[in-house]
Length: 373
Ligand SMILES: *Cc1c(COP(=O)(O)O)cnc(C)c1O
View 1: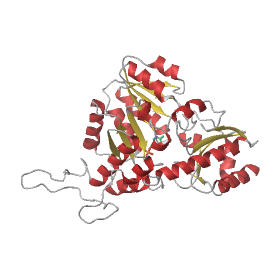
View 2: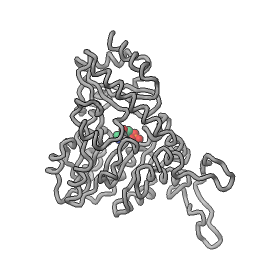
View 3: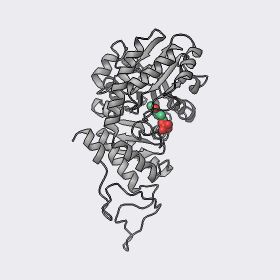
View 4: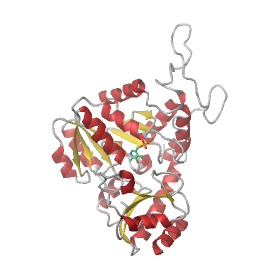
């Protein structure tokens, strides 16, 4: 079945008790045992499993074409669980350019427990191959990366991972299952912040780990999810499952609008550089063309001048909202260096744009007036 159909039906069933077409929200924390001591419905206690979470996990696993999924209370909780599931002292290869929260988890939590991290420019496949050692247990990829939209070659890097028996995890938050199919390119795990495109309405925090196949690492992730309990509430699961139904149509429009906006911005004299994989001049364009089905709704721009010049543009937009995050229906603009803090390697004149679902002509007109001033 095609992804549009799966997004609407995967994981959902008509409620057997009432015929409700939209699933009820099961707030129960505990489930009745039968007289023989068994759990005839398969549910015991809501930290272990909950009907709304099971529906969401089935849906996300199906969308990615995986074996199973574990839903978490945030994308960061999902990422942290992948790292916690590794053996003590494991070596991880991580991208230099990635979501700051992931970088901080690796640096301040994983490394503090004795994990070894090699920071590599993952858009350079040869650099990744050179960093792999027999101790490497995991290669972490985020492609397109945040906020520079660097592209890593998933298939090539999966070969490096395989050469030493390491697992390849791909943060597919930006591309979404519509835009990029990491499992078809050799990834073992996919991580999502469902807070972004999957939820899609800027009103629910969540995350997920999807496994391509059953493995010791996957079983450990499931165990940590259940034992640690960093799980989303039934209502949060319900909201993400609802958001997913329109994912294909939202992401396709956002990607189409982002290409128009990126192309327009590239021609503006006030803009020094546009980072968008859909532009032929982007250094990762060829790899992106090979592995992405959509270019995505995210782009970054460098405004000619310094941080003040970029902040001035962000200050003058009227329709774009100055806020962090991405993937919602409303377009957002953000000065990334100031949110990433003093350790940030992001160019000070960079603004990150999350293209929403407004008409692109209106979004371009607003950027035009902000640049003119
Ligand atoms: C937002 C984000 C995360 C973290 O997700 P939260 O739900 O905010 O914890 C991880 N990776 C990427 C690429 C993100 O954009």
